[in-house]
Length: 255
Ligand code: NI
Image (cartoon, rainbow, N blue to C red; front, side, top):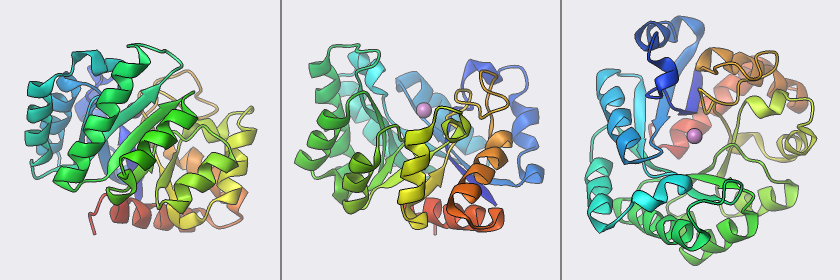
């Protein structure tokens, strides 16, 4: 079944129909979801969601754009959350120079601290990196993050950067963007990368695939991404689903 490796079902966009939507996922072929924390508050709601639904797992972490809220005390709290039975990763963490806030030094500091946390608690990392290719790679190498392993989610760089991550053992997360007309660079990356490192993700409520671009996204649209991968790789859709599910289980250590 389809494994959605990156979702934000605790988001307000699902306030009206969250229960109904989640209850319908299995019948639609979605077997597992990892809900991703993006702040202290959303890490809390993510863990609540994971404790409520057997097929949902949690990632605990603070998104680069939210790192101004972090301090030592909140890092200790995050570490406690990493010990919860349904927590399978530290994330999403990283660098976002597109929004460029808070200042880069703050983002870098807490990216490093959260990588160190992942290494301490022995969980993989979920990395958010936007317009920050060089600094993300440098920090990942300097902090030896490859020992924790993990995924570069919503991968947005070219084949050269992809190769560096693949060489270190990381997975690449691919979602709705792959179906966009202007996604030539990502299609090249998918064509280039080995099938055993590709993860499916929604990043919902964002990043809905064509023809739903701009609408609220959910795991129900993932078959459109499966179809796009299947066309690029020249393999059947069932094979895309089976391979990406096995990859996700290996990466999140749910085997
Ligand atoms: Ni996300």
